[in-house]
Length: 170
Image (cartoon, rainbow, N blue to C red; front, side, top):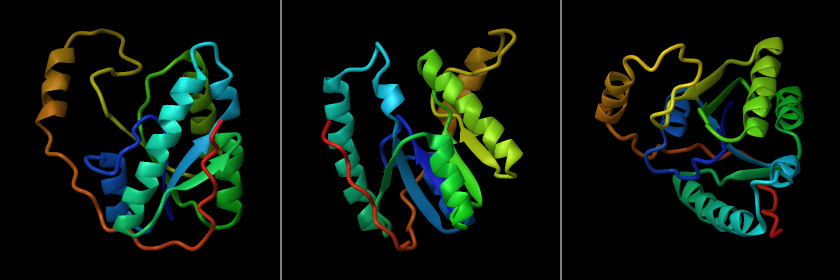
């Protein structure tokens, strides 16, 4: 099972992580509502309301492709561990995120968990910010190569049984 972890990239069209995962195998599209993220000082109810509305649209869009968005609440690492225990996680796909320090540390925890549990995590570039660069030299060339890549089309998704879970209102 190829788990596509949606973070800030809440779209099915031109989503390279989704398209790549679908080429490899059956996809489980996943969004994790992280209460600790929404407690951060740079988060607000207005932002969550927008995300919740977008999640409903994404769930419908993915449903038309064959598999609605699965929503779970809690720690990403704990949810991934539960998926692995139930045989529903072979690889993790996402876009690389740039956010606050909380999301950066969370991603480091996810990377460590994936390494420790033999789960390949494919983080795809989604924007012009590159992590872990020692120098900005060559940035423009990297940006030009990224922007020249063709857009990813929406894949067909095989249905996966299970409760898609509620999208919290607040």
